[in-house]
Amino acid sequence: MLYNTVIFFDGVCNLCNSSVQFVIKHDKNKRFSFAALQSQYAQQSLKPFRVSPGELNSIMLMENGKLYLRSSAALRIARHLNGFWPLLYGFIVVPKFIRDWVYGIIAKNRYKWWGKKESCWVPTPELKSKFLG
Image (cartoon, rainbow, N blue to C red):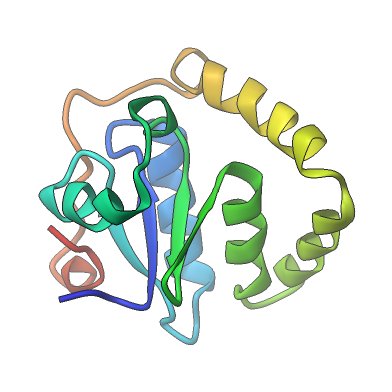
């Protein structure tokens, strides 16, 4: 089964897991589903997009049959959150190479700055339905 709006994230990254929990908290319309990049669901769903192994260190958003990576994914996610977070989407006007350069610095250092888990985060039973295997 394919879902319309799925956030793919690094399941062992503390920053990524905190970001997923943040999105869940601010996703009042329950728009997003989630899948760890390490999951079978992610591997199967990303196959048609020919994602290179080097891209598997980035947040990805699959929305209406399109795949968005890095800063584009993060800004599109922010656009759908409640509160003032959609204002961040205004940064989409910044050239992608600049946005992705900043994103890349954070992605490259995420384990060093925020740490890493030995295994993927396991959601609570009430959140389990939002996560795809």
